[in-house]
Length: 357
Image (cartoon, rainbow, N blue to C red; front, side, top):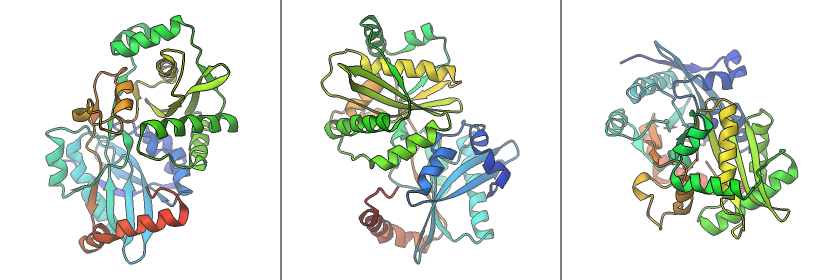
């Protein structure tokens, strides 16, 4: 097993953060980006930049940090650590333990969430590393992924027949997809479409508009975020926000009017975005959130409708291992799990009106 050491990134490394993250073994993740770090700074998190140095590569990972009275610090390695193989995670966690102890960082637990596909091999490796399985936090721990490396004609043929037929019909009926500038009006319209869709199709609740405005602004000003709309009778009827980050593209946000006349409009939005992302160098397109593969056809799952739409492009669902806790102080972690997390989440939500994670 290779050995790793952990340390904070240098100022020079932080200055080229996105370049280093997208060079990670799995190509990084938009939730480890400089843009996302800028958003989370305004929403209750301190930011740390962590590097794991091994014999063959260095993995750069964003750490979200919160501090609590009596307990100390909680670390959240969002979508990390990024590893070449799941078998390297125990060595990285050993390095993390040693670093926290050596530097006296007062961290009582670290949440990890590696982009490792769930498998018969992965589960025992993670449980054998002393990790505690906890509820998943990110919507794309189960998701539809599409390989977009093929040339456009072949890529269209590679789609599930439902998606391919919808795209072709929308093209025949001359549905127009508009690439929108990231203006205040665009963002407010996008938000209204999202909230309307969530209200009808989900039991979840959208974050406040200010969160999304900053999120969209941080990615668009770096050339990583893109808005796509379809209009009916002069009114925006479908909206999507898509991010290109390294070799990966992600359909991050979307919404639509529930009663529309143009068949295949939402599919054509995705098709146009996919081809744009391909031109920007992406080879994989993440539809960002479906039910788990074993519940894809379960109509009671809150993401059932979204899953049907997204798997009309990609025929399968990819399940990642999800979220685990690395316990660094057993006594303080027990206080956290018994009451601390629940109490601090409630206090934060009451004080700010915002989501804790």
